View 1: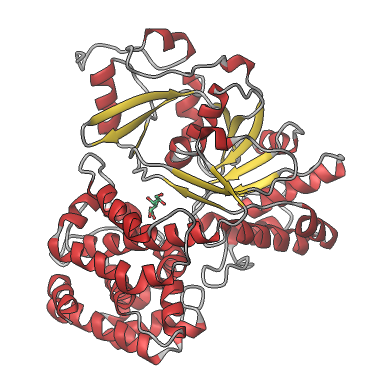
View 2: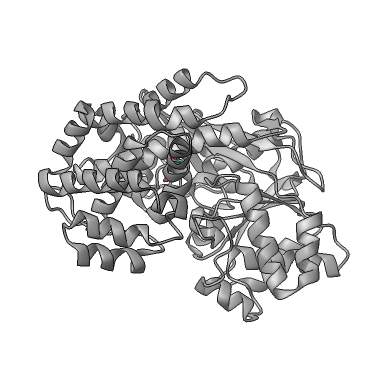
Amino acid sequence: MTDETRPAPRLAEATLASLPGDVERPRYDRHAVTPGIAHIGVGAFCRAHTCLYTDDLLASGARDWGIVGIAPNRAAVRDALAPQDWLYTLSVRAPEGDRRRVIGALRGVVSAADEAAATLRLLTDPSIRVVTLTVTEKGYCQDAATGDLDETHPAIRADLAGAAAPRSVPGLLAEAIGRRRRAGVAPFTVLSCDNLAENGLKAHRIVSRFATLRDQDLGRFIENEVRFPCSMVDRITPATRDEDRARLRADCGYDDAWPVVAEPFHQWVIEDSFSAGRPRWEDAGAQLVADVHPFETMKLRCLNGTHSALAYIGSLLGLETVSAAIADADLGAFIRRLWQEDLVPTVPPVPGTDLARYTADLEERYRNPAIRHLTLQIAMDGSQKLPPRLLAPALERIAKGGQARAVAFVTAAWMRFLSGRTDAGAAYTVSDPLAGRLLSPAAAAGTDAASLVGSLFAIADIFPPAIAADAGFRALVTEQLATIFTHGTREALRRFLRG
Ligand code: CS2
């Protein structure tokens, strides 16, 4: 333990040797590493996942796959990590304590917002052969219900209007691929690592469409010549808090402006389809497969789907973290029903995986009391998350003549969540790219369930027509929402469980 008030050394190349012996350090010469990957979206997740796998790979002897990060909107991560020579600490947090490791795979970060020229220079550099993405669902500027490019999106409109320095992710990728082509440089492979169904296909569709709107020939080139493999990524990584920085300083005696905390579990399944070589991530434990679809469906529905359920229902019940939410007897029982009734039956067979075991392990991961994963963090961007996580499996259940009662309950809880108040009356902010279109109907409808369901089901970028038109599903959502309004979330949950 160190004295909180004494100045502590800042993590950097120069201080690495003085870190406590139990903090793992890069086991390779960072100066011998050259960049091969550009990563867009340098948030906590990629630093706990993509960078970790790549760090292991570099430690196994690979030299030409260093990562340069691109921060699409905010320069904060660049400014935090530059004085640290791009080093940061990954704290793997198990119930029995933290295991710390300094990750060296990141070789720099540029900010697309204020270093546009440097960003495009990086993306057109022939040594960059893979571009990985963690830009969250909304970074794709898509219509969440169809997965098509949202051509009315303000960033897309600005980039299409010919802004010299593109700001949207599709705009940036299309511009970089176009410049490489003109310079005779082979295109990079684009590897999406976001929680979208068929993330590679979606990214491909969106970037090709954007390019076509600017230049048909480039659109055709991207459509036919550029690879966009799919991948399934998994590691629970809550946003870093000041307490995490303070704990690192107290335990290890050094300062890190932006450490990352994650659970022990991690998984990465990647479609093996790269055009210009790829890192041997399998040497670091990733699974390279021909078809990611079953893995991705399992993870998106069983993990992310129940995460969203814990987020909306948990927030309304005033449960701040996933571990508190899953430990709530009613909500825990509901999550098991959601898996059993609506999610697991829609997951195709997954090679080497027993789904009952998978969901039991998920429950264990949610219970990890050392991880403070806020329900309100997961509740963000519901308009983008509900369709792939919950509405898609509901649609499949309905198409097979079944019902989707548990999904209907979560949908009702999300609608109730839009009011911005817990059942006990505590206010929170609803953060969603479609907030402008969600919050006014929610306010106008008040506690009139049918009216709220009517106006939200009319938003076609969230509710596909087949769901919106299904009278049975609409009735279920309306009935559950009315019960939540009249009797509160807890009682509605209990009635659901009895039904
Ligand atoms: C979460 C995910 O915030 C969210 O929406 O569901 O970030 C989740 O923690 C990861 O996908 C786990 O791999």
